[in-house]
Length: 68
Image (cartoon, rainbow, N blue to C red):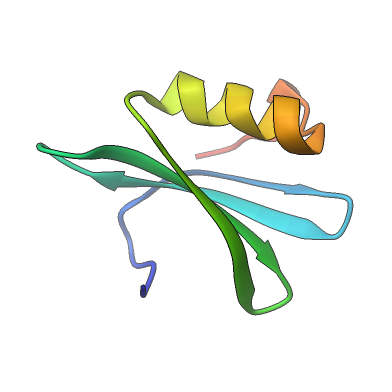
């Protein structure tokens, strides 16, 4: 998957990069987790807030780290 300008929000935490990408209208939002250039995890959620909560629960990403 090539992540383009559909990025809704982005964060960096503990050496990883996190991107929330819109795949609308049918699917929702993907949370992609990168270590270096490699996509290591992806999670499909219904809303942006759910992606941020997922990143917090699984990787400890504080809500304050997210930017658009």
